[in-house]
Length: 311
Image (cartoon, rainbow, N blue to C red; front, side, top):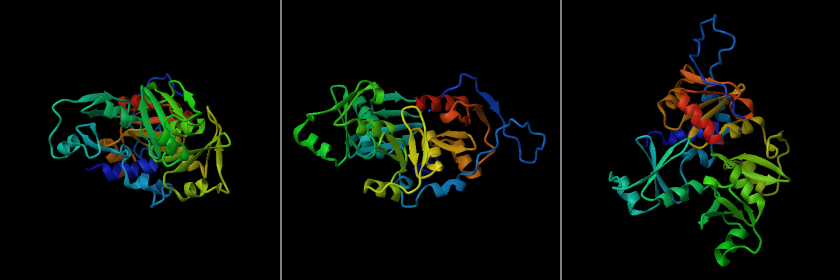
């Protein structure tokens, strides 16, 4: 698929206060135009400038952000078709046979279609590194391979559990053996791993050596901390936090100089930005993004959808 590798790379590269000010259309001024107003937003740095953010060995580089374990996902006509891996419906679709009946769910960042609403629901709650199970409208969450996960599979509901009503995707009640697992699950964003430690959210690039060291009990010698609603964030450097804070499912995001450029995954505008890095007609909304960043997007629909995806 044309965009799969490109999206994976862009998500890795780019890998919440809302303003009521209306969006204004802005045409970035050519570099040679010395009369450009001082308030005009500057072109974002080209994506190539941020490639140092992602280790070449990181799994996220080789995976589009919409991929999930146990599911086959096909971008088609602006929608994502979702099927359980290996299902007959998936095989048929791969061979060009579209289902006679389907269910559609429209989200801020993407439109999903499948043969069953239950398949979409299971897909939406899946996160890399987590085991999830929907039971009577409630969501069980465990770290894959953890002792709690193994115990749940062997004996069912744990003797002790933590329950957060309405905290999960689609307003589901989230349940686990402990609060930290739920917090890490809810804090997940494409391309990143989150670890709760001493009341802080540690943010790592997915598959990074720093994450492996942290899981082995070795805390980074140097780190950056930012105080945010719901608790502080920590990472090995500010660039990781910049990319984490603006990330959202269904979008490629590029933080730069107090702003963030936002594009829908697979869009022609994203392809142009990845090629040139600037000169994209846009709408801009000052201080509407995460940590008060100005949000630039190719159109108002993309901007509004991105803000909705942030929650």
